[in-house]
Length: 249
Image 1 (cartoon, helix red, strand yellow):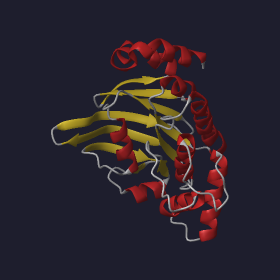
Image 2: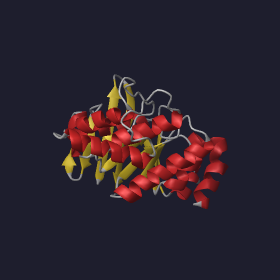
Image 3: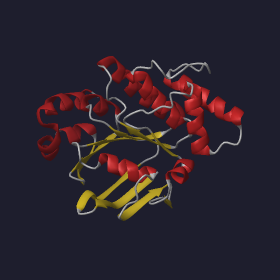
Image 4: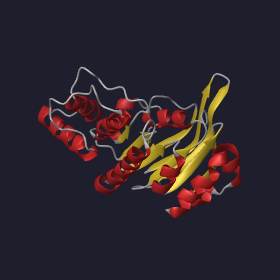
């Protein structure tokens, strides 16, 4: 579904992403991990069209998309969430999702846009009442709203950015289960950036690890968790817990 070759992004003299290549198969959940500043968000922003690569290729379903604006990329079928939710507080829950759907798909029908928004809200477990408001939502509900907004664009590929941050242990498990449902019920392929390693390793099919803008490892979760270089640069004292979580899956 997605083929990335030699992806590079520079900001002046700083190389944020250096010659990164990877592929994503249809129906797969790929985990993208690495320390802060390793290039994960930069890669997401290039995939979503917020940044233009200095070099490299991004092919989605055989079509080159590197450098296309975000609205073109969304309309081709790549949706994304954001690490920090920023909903429109003057709009209702449904209206927030409808707006996302109109932007992503350019739906000419207001009725169809509302139907798609209500389906997305129901899937993530949020109220579909058109009078329901954003104010008062907790961290877990705001993360669900982010997912609903992305799903309203009818993505084939979902870029999920730190869907667990700010959640407690029970909410993390619920969010991970929700990503599984999105893949299972909608057939959406997912790339998931996350810092909560124990949960991610139980959900993803494969993991890719970045460090200082370079890919240093990729493979099955148990393999990556036991990679000495990964342990050295990223996992550190969490290695045992992550390895145990990967192996238990």
